Image 1 (cartoon, rainbow, N blue to C red):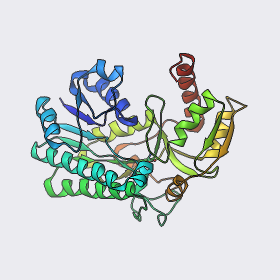
Image 2 (cartoon, helix red, strand yellow):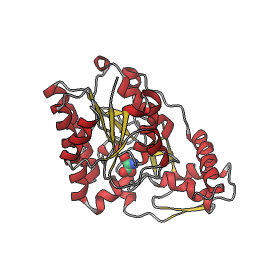
Image 3 (cartoon, rainbow, N blue to C red):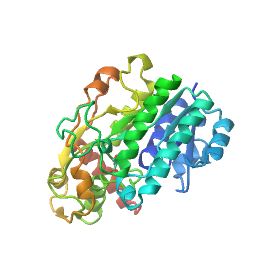
Image 4 (cartoon, rainbow, N blue to C red):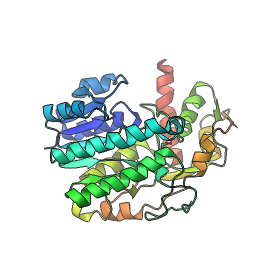
Length: 320
Ligand code: SER
């Protein structure tokens, strides 16, 4: 049996991952750690919820000891857009929060730590198409700098202390439960909400911007499959590339127009264009496929249909 703590449970990925883990391991086995965002009713009703701040080690220790936590997942991070506005905050949360969690896991001899990474580890000198697993990691955002350091730190704890630390480089994650916050890939979520609400969207990156993306059901599958993979079969630890699909904003708009023909898109690129331009078009995830059987289910059109249906229902109910 595992006792899992998800730090950052109210966030875009954390909120759905916590529920998915509760479905598998049981509600009481998965503690939702939230900082200041109010957790959803679903999170509150399905299992324990605690106020947890990755920067407050004493608070973390209290929750870990109370629930005898032996698996910890760190979903708390300042993303690329917010990071560029406040680099020191990004460094503090992303690095000191991670160190607190890794040290606590070491001190309590935990079974496993999951520390997600991102396509933000890549930079303008990285090969852009089918970006290899092993390649140049010279990001130009503070978020990317903290993610490279986080991957190296996680790998260091594996080697130095024999710990089980794992992580994967998420592409842009698209979902309809909890909005993303402060990322460059947030446009790929906003476009669906605006298509339903206003039938038009002004995008903050240009039409030819192509990035690797993934729909939330695939994100949950990748995360849980990596957590459950046999440690001895892992040739990498904290830095698995995981791909699912890639498309330009113009291609997204075309996919939406198949359902909403009157949808209109316009473009007003801002500082996030440079960030997007520094990231790959697509990634080569063959090590993840080989080592732990990774395979995505959703392509752009399947995701569009699902997103528009789910957001359309929220709109009908007056929730958005
Ligand atoms: N979605 C993240 C961002 O845009 C990338 O990991 O910052």
